[in-house]
Image (tube, one colour):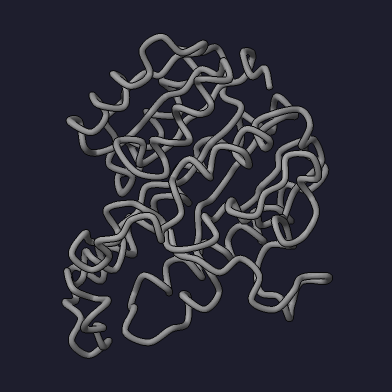
Length: 277
């Protein structure tokens, strides 16, 4: 797939799923502004991108800050000439609230209020601020992609998992709403999830020593390349499950279903898209 004419701003690109997507897009020729609050992680991402067909440019960003978000979008446009895609992947996982959350789930009454609020700010407010900044430019160009990384429906509502599930359910609802707001504008909004617990820092090594049981971050590359391409023109309001994504039939289940909750979205299968970010 040739993405040499495409440009992307991706948050959280200093590690994990976002790094894999940034490198995957750049390998296909895209120009990527890799944003993260972690400058050391960004340096590693840039180093891994040496020799690829496209470009990866590091940009420090705290997604909680409105001014920084707007500046990041403006920087991408100024650097690349336009912005085609925004991928909201920066996030704090349950491990931020409690290191051993798998062995000892965190009940909501034991959650630290300040950390609770900070997770809301990163996982839910951040994507809104970035999308709000990017949408007008994309609407003007009549072409654009907003992709949000959420999680499984069961993870959203499972106990011992607050407020991670809340933030992802809010972003899932937001994705459906934004897709509706942008319908017929040429700008699409979709969701991508790994399709299982992913091999990132959100799953501590001591909790899952055998990483072969986890979904490799590279699974995200197929669906994100498809969404960045003209092949996905008109495809909006969808949830792509990376582990089951079929590049030959990208809109077929179980790799794709309507975004948001299955009982509210026509044609979706109950439980489709299990997995955590």
